[in-house]
Image 1 (tube, rainbow, N blue to C red):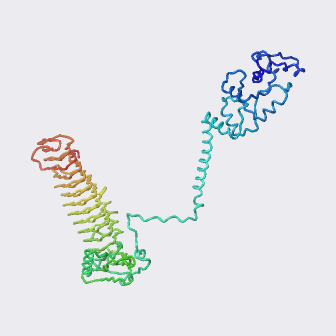
Image 2: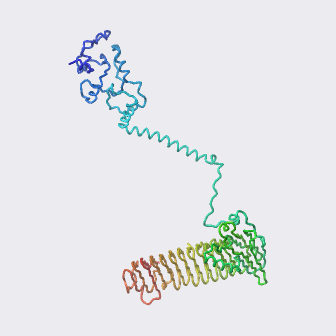
Image 3: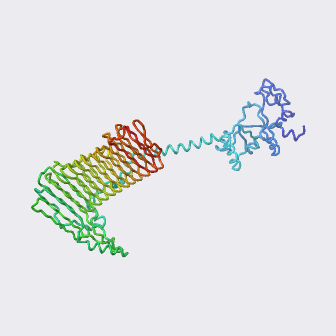
Length: 592
């Protein structure tokens, strides 16, 4: 073997004459055998062996050793690595024979903790001591290799870091929540917005529109007392002598001018409070106006026919041109309360742009007529009403509600609005007639009763009609573009339900000879009839099916998918059922 090959073989040192284990260990009792081949090392105790000098191959040899792991003389070390300076120092030091051999643990002072973590993360990676030199250039690539081999541990470390931040954020949130009252005690909370369902009280409406320039009108007494009257009339309206101005405004509008008329009464409220006093009553008022010279007038008549009549008239103005429209916009806000004695026979109220609230129960049922009319405002009876003749509730662009107690009239109940909702939470009963009319608004009476001895008439459009129970000799319901749902309808003579572009759901109770007519279009009709029904029936649709749940007792004259006609329980009975629709189905069941 040549000298060059011996210099590159780390085990050739054992075959040189310079190796003398006895000389270095003369104090030992046992002399080690001369070993000429590394394979014979198994016969010698490991405690008697000395390590070879550090091996530092040239770059070419190191490359060969790295590429061929099975070549003779290659060294694999997964414990660590030496830097170049330590290797040179190790080569210059003589061997110490009196030191017991220990497992080689290579520590380099140039390796930082990050490099050590990378090395420990890759225990299976083989290194040549001369090549495993750490510096700033190869640190990144080696750490990348270590991270690639132990990606799970690397991800776990990042997860632990993020978990610390998340845990700290949760603790901070809990502390802020616990001590929020103390931390933010000086912050002024935002004011809640008024509910849009109930118009707010606006005694200073003019002030908010005209920068505090409105004043209380002093032209009428704020308190008017009355005694021993039978009839009370209150009217708040725009003056009738403005008809000429109205005509002129219409003419200007038609000619393309910017001016237009509008109502000066912007918003107001009337409160009616029934009292337990039989004869004495009071009218309280607080009327705000803008501008201060707005020309209002009132007329109070107290004649000998036991009628008190209060008339308040407000002029009608035209809008100004350009910026003047915002600078001068006349307005009136009227707040009026009537303390009502219970011995009155008739109460008539006619208002413009004002709400009406009846806030207390009526002591007796001796009143003949309660007539409440307004526009652009709601009417609410909070404690019902009972009277001998008529209840009349009329408004526009506002809701009408009956709450608290029943409404009972010995003659008629008439209720009308538009662009608002009619809602009953109590029964409405009349001896003769109940008429409820609406447009662009719902009619809802759930779960209450609407009853009349003669007739119940309900009309609306573009909204739903939802009724729980309706009873009368004749029940008539009209709708358009809305749902009609009647849970219980009962009539001695006739039930008529008409609709267009809206479904109908009807359950009929009562006598076996009911006359029922149901007509709609472009929507389904669903009917539940009495099981005892006797009479003729005709059910028809177009582009739909007619279905009868049970054929028991039925004799068909026509039995087609879209048309079914015949008799139930014999021919010649007085009952009659007619149902029509289009582009939808009809379903009938005799199961009530």
